[in-house]
Image 1: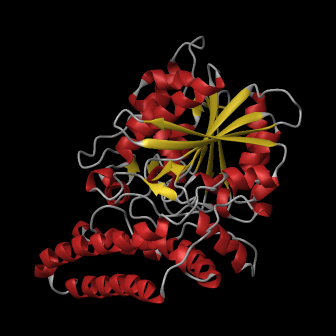
Image 2: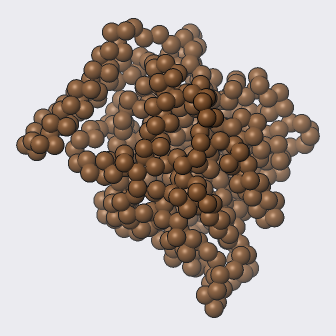
Image 3: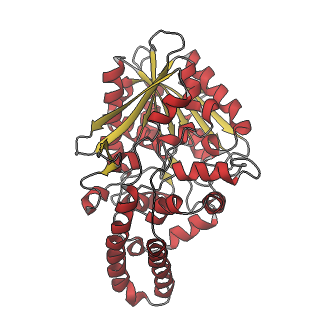
Length: 444
């Protein structure tokens, strides 16, 4: 099993009831405030108190979770996989964790490296959901040095790499401070993505690397490239799965529609929906599997089967490892801003556009002797969040006569695929997508 496991986890019944009661009361008050706007101040006070109470319980629980994560599990189950864990510090002081692994079967060192970046409310484990046939292990078997990136507040970013004498992982020293959670996609674009890219190049010793990004991971990559013209020189090829670059206005999905209507003051501070991170650690498998699947379906993110027709155990395993929530309220508010407005990715509050479309147009017009990465964009035509038509129009490569060509950029729209299906849906739906990815990379 490639997902993080729980060990040594114990929590008394009183603690569980207290935690659930906190969230239930908060929800009831939120509903009441719908009809009493004057109580917003009291709700803000309630959110502050609940954040403090949650963290008392939350820290005790998470501190019992071992850092085996992917490392020990992968080494034990895949004898031909060599894995290392690396840490890099961003320019604004956050510690990011990357997993680096490669196949030792051939005996030769990998000559290519690929960085894979997860989406919103996920972590690097999302690239390992399908075990041996996951895209990460397929690339390792194909001769790649695979790097799995983690953004700043994923579980990996909240934990240090040092265990105490009892084998318990330690919390980040600033995880309980509001400043730790005061970031949006802008910081992921400006700090996290460049830091991870530099680390991969430094350790691998390669001049250029490849990249796979899912949703937010693809969006932060393109935002970074559009903000810094030199960033493109680090990459040979980039695979963008459901890239969060051009979004629908008011996306489909019942839960998404509810989120878009909720006032900002109701979200509290620090981590968004901490219950999403904590509940999978204390709930029975059948509840975790059923609730996780239902939420993804109601949100509109998932359109295809997940974890087998009746396999709640598989679903529970996945939701206990991914997603673990672990994003800031500010980051969630940033994405809600973009979804309310629709169109290209913009900066938080100022709504200044990331010049992604302008960058792509510049690449089309620049001299062929100048480097630009090869880009393969994979979209779902049933994506509730991404505007696949606008994305296709922007990413398609055009010649001097504005005619579509396929030279360094390619766009594939998959029929009846939702936003998260490319990594989450059952493997029988995705194997042909992974074949296309490997073929594109081998040709470039």
